[in-house]
Length: 242
Image (cartoon, rainbow, N blue to C red):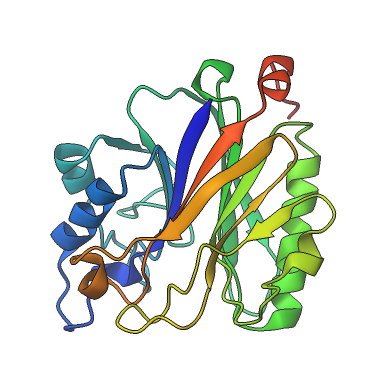
């Protein structure tokens, strides 16, 4: 099975023109033509963290369903993050992963049923400080490892300007890929948004989406990756632990 994965930091729907227009974000999501999208900064920062990207808009104007990571209140996600899954794909498990660091951070995890690809997707928005990013990668690796063998993709804003982008913190379990410069959106020079793939997932092609709405809708451009799922891994997975 081949799936298109994507990651997009929507910057609370605040565009480069300083206008907050969630409908532009939705237009970009539709252009991506992805099966699964990890989103960052979907909620406003201050408590009670109301949604910046309205759930009703996503459900009305896209072919995505929003996974229920929000614990309570008006938020769309958890720690500002959520995962969108194209309707028709079956999600069997979701989990929240607390991450260490100077400021509150978390990652989110979704596991798809075998008939929908049988893969695990982790969405992450990592710290600005390298030491904390390394700790957060370790926490994600540990959380994934406790759930048993399953092809896994880690997507998100890794906040790393280096060429390696945190690859050393993920090796040898994951191969890190940078689809290209995605920040700042107007003249991207930093490949902050990346994807890491475990055994069982193979990168077919990847890129940065440069459509007209994306160039102004957020301070990041979305990235995408087409991955092929190994059939033996898919068929071997039936019931993850935990």
